Length: 328
Image (cartoon, rainbow, N blue to C red; front, top):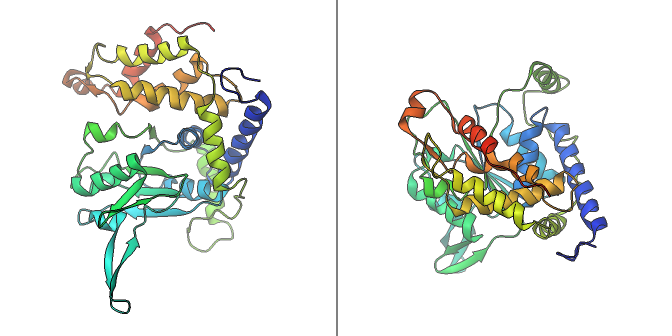
């Protein structure tokens, strides 16, 4: 028995095996991108939201649909555009002529997994409506609060190439995302397998998640989140996470460092990484493995670093090498 949490080691290992089955089922539909799958699962276990950055056509929609199918969850997709209104996201009240009364039409946020495609194409007011939902897990329409059914997770995407006509997310809003995940091109073998799968015995190039099976239900995902939240974190590991975040505030090349929410994100994601790895406690390696994804969107590089072509990832890699990890 884990004395600090009251969760048995057997229960934790069973939860870990369930998560590995989820990962295996998603991989049937999403070729390659193992790191991306792991990080999305970590965010789900930590009850967080993710910002995914990558060029179009790398399987972001496929990933979300496959994940939803593994726990028989509901899935919605919103294509963000400059004319998208907040009510298009959250819903609105409409007058019903038959009943002569107002009825609530719930928007696409009332789902388990929400894909907010190209979130930076919508104006600030619409972005703010979604980010409020992410934080509060509820929508207020005509003064009536409507709670979202758990689990709820937003996966927002950005195209790093085409920036014309976009509305970049302010730093305060970026901070609401637990992780920022970078999705890159598959390697040659993975790309061959991907092309082969899509073009074999299939009409068109429609998204196919037929081979992905349901492993659990939505209630089971909530239980996995509870197990994740109960994982033991030694005080020295917590200090390690805080030291990493504090180091971003005076590290050369970083003009604005991460706030306290960065440390909270590292511990939440670290617990989920530990469960994914089959551990019943969080290690420094769990924190380090997720640190770049947890902090890359919470720092601002100095103009000199940007001119030199440096990226948040390279700066953070050097920073992580300089912070001593505790031996536990």
